Length: 467
Image 1: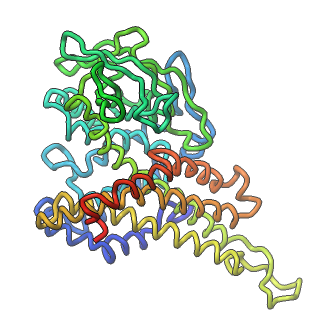
Image 2 (image 1 turned 120 degrees about the vertical axis):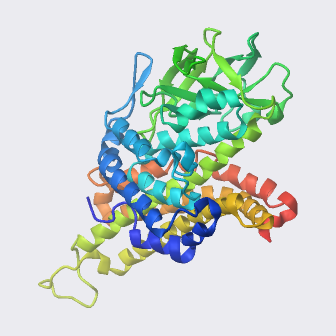
Image 3 (image 1 turned 180 degrees about the vertical axis):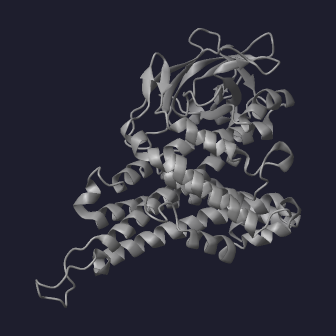
């Protein structure tokens, strides 16, 4: 493996400590037990685990996509040890309180740690990341009973999570979903419907999978205001926390993707036998409002994932350009002169510098958004927290879209630097491009993000986010 193959530790330290002043966060009560030393220790652990457990099977997962066998999704065996190492090191609960086994890290530092895993293997990383988002949603809006039954095992890494929104006929138009939830006599609900493109919708990495499903009640008003949110586990959970029978959630099939192949993309059928048990989260008809918390977290995560795929391509092409001798400089006409490394050619330098600008600028944007989230939670005054919240709201569609577009362009340039070799599967830059091509699409396309920015965010709260 090349040195600094995941991301530049020098650049990361500069952005964290010189630009975003991460050490200043230790003056806040929540992070008072931390220091630059503990931050660096977490970053170092993330790098080691990412290099040891995640990076080695990135290519294998791409060449051996999940298989559908006997109604189950089968993954390559290297995925489970990787996610187990991630959980054992505490990264699943990196921002949670010390007293529940968390690291109590600022979001800025946790995202900087997570960047290593996304750079190493974006497909395997998706499983714990989806779980973290689902757990945060249940923690924010679930009942005490739901937290005990589902959240605690998710925090412990025994249950994984998903978000189940998209339906075959509706795509991104959630107002048109047809999945229905009928009240049952025991206070639960019976769901019936079909969902597609559900990342992590089936696997054997955990004891259970907790699906967060958008559906409509019989009395639901039309449009998005009629959407409710339900917890639908793969296996029912008994009162004592043990697993019960298999819920009526069936894996209908797997999608075969251009890239990002390590993450299962599933079609799920809910209630084919009329026995799909679901649990209402929060109030009826408020489901989309709740789901936006996870969606916005995912959008920032998508932006960072796009950065790291672009970053990986940049670092590989930079290393290649330093080592690949080819051609001579314009002022050296002699055919007997020694060929120079291609990094000395002006056009190659242009492509490398363009990649550097895209990925490092986008990386800062994502880390800045993470720092803003810390300010929304632990800012010293109400005004600071309010302003950070307004600015983060405004920037979230930008954080998702800009890296997804321009770090994909960086991947194109990485292929171009390698020339014909870049177009072959013998080199990783073509996989980085294929993996990154998903990011302008999922969690809201560029068009949807622009509608969010221009139609909602700019005018929100009188445009205070712009001030």
